[in-house]
Picture 1 (cartoon, rainbow, N blue to C red):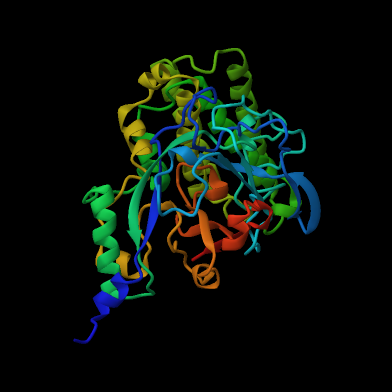
Picture 2 (tube, rainbow, N blue to C red; picture 1 turned 60 degrees about the vertical axis):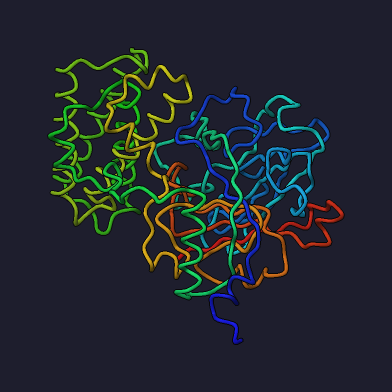
Length: 429
């Protein structure tokens, strides 16, 4: 009997592990043994790794970004997994991805459980997320002041076995992949827009739920100020600002500085009364309209101001979740729900399965993995230690859902527990 295409793809099935993060970040002191972001619980004999990273056309030796810690005792796979049965893996990588198909990386292995040691304090030479003045930086975070300009928020992990298949742009393989993922994750939720990412300024103008605390005002004002300062710098202008344009941007700068002074006099988590909320929204709306009037002279689009506001709201929610769960009671429910559902499994389409490109970031260990280019083919004989797809829970440096970061290791090196041989690949569609 002839073997069908379906049978051929079924024969490629490999057990793999879905890596699922929590919806919301947790305090750094949370006792999770496996997590994305946060600070690694490194054994004292392991040094925080460094590497030469290209930033602004120069090579700099910096401490690498910590991306994940995985306690292997929590990972299923007894009897079939090539991974060690116990011990902890620590993943580090450059967060500069522009032009870097193989970003510098290091994976460290310790024999102890993930909660055996305290958090390792970050080194002084830790690279900012996305590098120095990188394209994917959150520009209004200051590396000298803001902890999370260098450290991602902490998300505990859980693990689930599924079957991975080897195919490329194949409808039958896509059908099998969708069936397997739905078996592991459920049928999926209806697709919906991330309204804080794609909202228009006019919608924010009519929304009286923000700003809900002074920390959010601080983040929004710093965002505006970062754009104004940049646009007042001649090298960022498309053509020289006229006197009226300079006067308008200086007016915005003065207003932003005034709001920052008010922020310094108040506790960040304090509520904002209704009158002040209205006054602040009016100021922010004036910023948007001013940028619309000077758009031919400046680098910043007025739509960027609205995009940054959504980013600031989500960043404030992260900060509040990191402080304590009760703090989230002060977040408008629509904002909190929107943030929490950003990487829930969405109902897949046939096309999603065929191209292995889902509207959900699929993090995984083992199996074949997926990506928009050819890393999975080039590393067909290697072991996939970890795949991290672009996830909107992360800050801008790794929020693009069309991008994939892989960590690969040669099978013989894994047998020897020689994790110095790990290589990273980074691909974007």
